[in-house]
Image (cartoon, rainbow, N blue to C red; front, side, top):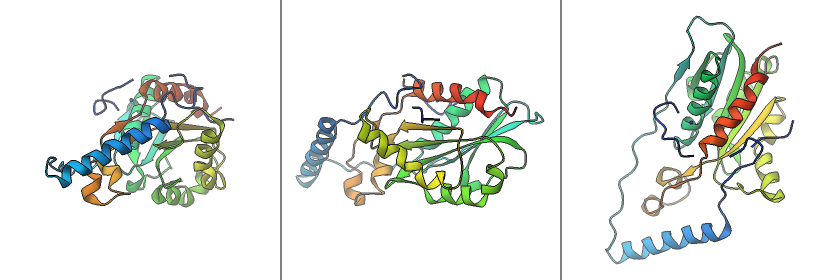
Length: 237
């Protein structure tokens, strides 16, 4: 199946079709503009005209449950996040599936959720340097046998390769190459993410990361549409 291309109360919906890879993309012009803005901020800082912003607060790794706790046939959404964006995407997917009557839990992968009580699993991760986060890969490896006996859907949250051109599409599809060696997913979702100071701190010196503007390309309509389309695939026959 070709890949297709939002938290309850802790996400402010900011809203395009489930078949579009991503409705918004970082064009070369916008990327250069961002670079210029950052460069200008650096210049202002050197001149003493800009005060460095404080570090963002710690990422909240929240868990959510939808449906009665005693309901059978529950679905797990397990996520790995760097700066909190993927946690919010996972929560929105959970909210959407819960509204369609599915009983499910949304849990961070670092909590090592057990799969015994679930009939299907969605696994999502932020993309760092072209790959899922290591804890997401380790989670799949540790649960490979069980995951290969239930429906599994995968999703990525990334800030690069968000365009509709073929080169961009191929590069983002490659994000899951390592995971596809371990699983046969029923569907895959690729979502443009958010880049802020916390994400920048993974790539840039701390003082420079504090000058990076917040860039949020997440499209909540697209995320909800993908969740809706994958919903019937999570039901066991």
